[in-house]
Image 1 (cartoon, helix red, strand yellow):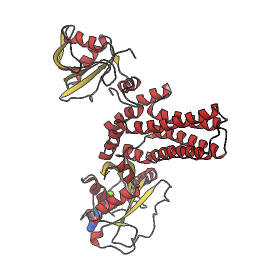
Image 2 (cartoon, helix red, strand yellow; image 1 turned 120 degrees about the vertical axis):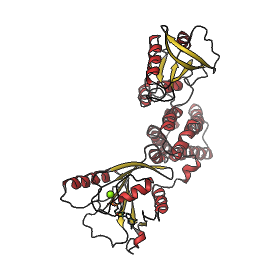
Image 3 (tube, helix red, strand yellow; image 1 turned 60 degrees about the vertical axis):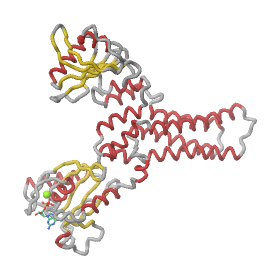
Image 4 (spheres, protein in one colour; image 1 turned 135 degrees about the horizontal axis):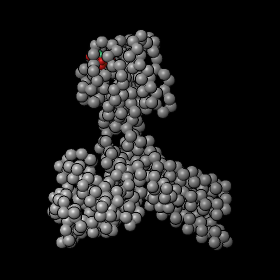
Length: 443
Ligand SMILES: Nc1nc2c(ncn2[C@@H]2O[C@H](COP(=O)(O)OP(=O)(O)O)[C@@H](O)[C@H]2O)c(=O)[nH]1
Ligand SMILES: [Mg+2]
C-alpha cells in the first residue's frame, strides 16, 4: 500500500477538463517536482500552477491537495485538473510515473479507501452503482447505500447477534443457572427478528438486479400487428422502421428505455410466421432466440381482429418469464375476445400509460422498496446473506431440538460472520481483490 498510484479519473478523449488522481505517500513530493519547489499547499487548497518536467512545459493546471487521513483514499492525495486533451493528460501521467508513481489498478483507489477504513464494502460497491445508475430509482438506491444505510442496518443485526452470543456464552460458562422458559422464548424471538430482517433484505435482491441491469424485454407477435410502432412509442422516438408491408423488421432491434424508473432492455423482433424468404427466416430465428432469453415478453396482437388461428403459437413460458399481451390498434375498434390483454393504440397513444402501469405491476410490489429509498442488495451481498439465513435456520432448528447451547452458538457465530462479510469484515483477501478489479481504472 505504500506505492503512490496515479490514474486518469475522467473518460479518455477530448473534453474541457481532465482530472488525474495521485494517491500515496509520495503524492505531494511528485507534485512539487512538477509544480516547482515553492509548492507548499494547505490541505484542501486548490492551486493554479504550471507543471514542467525536465524543463518541458506540460500544462497549466489546478492542483488540489488532500492530506491524509482526510482524503478519499485516506492517504495523501493530489488531484490534477488539466486541459481535456488526452495527449496532455498522458504527458502528465508519464511524468508522474517517471517520478516514482505507478499506474493504479482498476478500483485501487476505492480498495485503499476501504482498507483505510474510509468506507465499508457496501459503500465502495455503491460507488459503482452510483456511476452506472440508469434511472432515478437506481440512483436513489445507490445513494442510500453510499450513505451507509445498508451497513448501518447490518451493524444493528450484528450487535443483536453479539448480544445473543454473549448471553449463550454466559450460560455455557455457568450451566447451573437454568435458562427460564421465558428467557428461552425471548431468545428465540430475537433470533427470529434478526432472521426476518435478513429475509427482508434478501427479498430486495431481484429488484437489485432489475435496477442495476435492467430487464431483458422482448416484443413479439405476428407481422404487422404494430410491434415496431410499440417500441417507438415506449422509447418516444422513431427508432424502428414502421411499415404497412408485413415482414419489414428482419433483424432484432435493441434499445433501452426507462418505464417509471425501471430500466427495460427492449428488443423488437421480426414478426413470427413461416416464410420462404431466407433473410426473414433468419429474423424469425433471432426472434425465437430473443424470446428464449427474455425475462419479460410483450406479446402484441392486432386487437381489432379476432384472435389469429394459432399457426405459430408462442412457446410455453419458463417459470421466471413474465408475459403481457397488448391488443394494439384499439383505435380501429376492439374485438371482444381479447379479455386479458391491455388494449392500446400506438397511433393515438391510448392505453400506453395503462401498459406502463401493467409493466410496473407485473414486476412486483415496489412500494416497500420506495419506503427504503430503493435500497437493494447486489449479488455478492445476496450470497453472504443467504449463508446467514441458512445458519439462522440451523440455529432455530437447534433451539427447537433443545440442543446444547454450544451448538446453537456455532450457528449464530456463522450467521454473524456471514453478515460481517457483507460490509467487508473478515472478508477473504482474494475475494476483495476480485471485487475491486470489477471497478474501472481511476475509481
Ligand atoms: N390503426 C392503427 N394502425 C397501427 C397501429 N400501430 C401500428 N399501426 C400500423 O400497422 C402497420 C404495421 O406496424 P409496424 O409497427 O410496422 O408492425 P410490426 O410489423 O409488428 O412491427 C403500420 O402501417 C402501422 O402504421 C395502431 O395502433 N393503430
Ligand atoms: Mg416491425
